[in-house]
Image 1 (tube, rainbow, N blue to C red):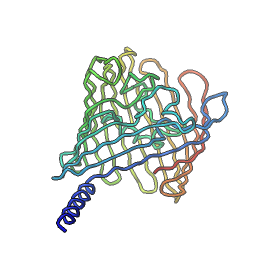
Image 2 (cartoon, helix red, strand yellow; image 1 turned 120 degrees about the vertical axis):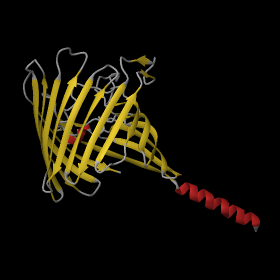
Image 3 (cartoon, rainbow, N blue to C red; image 1 turned 90 degrees about the vertical axis):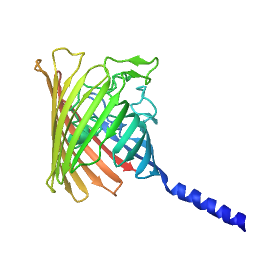
Image 4 (cartoon, rainbow, N blue to C red; image 1 turned 180 degrees about the horizontal axis):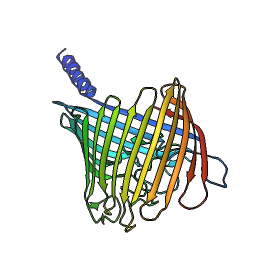
Length: 326
């Protein structure tokens, strides 16, 4: 009888401990017909980073303190390969981070979007997806310049602190040592990586801005804002990029957008421009699109865009596909 009571007590303790921690499997898959290259027919494709499979966990340590982790893999569904088919990107391209969270905010360590790069796409109503995206605030800048395919990636190995919400204000700071084990052999950059972000959100208003310097001493500064009128939401942003490789010239980028819901349908339109200071060269892009919700997790999407590059003829593009989150 005593052994049975002891066993039941042990099971109760294990059950209570298990209840204090959880792991969530989540992700998204989106793909469609895409045509964005002159002289080539439409293909099955998707925007890089759209498709992800993740494992997110949290453990209650007591006293308001929690341990967290996030592992996120990005993949290309048209090939079954990793994000950016054939571009030599890492398996856990999305994130590999662990941290602690509490009343003080949160501290995370690992490979992740930096303080500035995480929320930077908030000014793009297409959220850096589809052929119509105008996420141009940091065009010409890469957080992690070591990426093999030179894709201008926004993730790196850093320590990130995010503050609690103070009457609508939230701040974040990412720091990455100049010596990094992310590549072999270990490399030493010119500078320690630093990334900052400050935002204010209150009702329909969102305003934010930040600064980042990567290990190559390239710099990006950005400011953005959105306002939700209810019937429609507008977004705007401005960014300035100063890269060491392009001496005497700064890139100045801006975008504008509007998104309007009509029942199950959401309409979007956006404009983006990038300009190289002192050269007269600039690229402009106009995009329109629509989404139709089939459920809370599944929707159809289509968009079209016209890009006028700094050099060469205009480029027209379109896509049509389906997206599902889980």
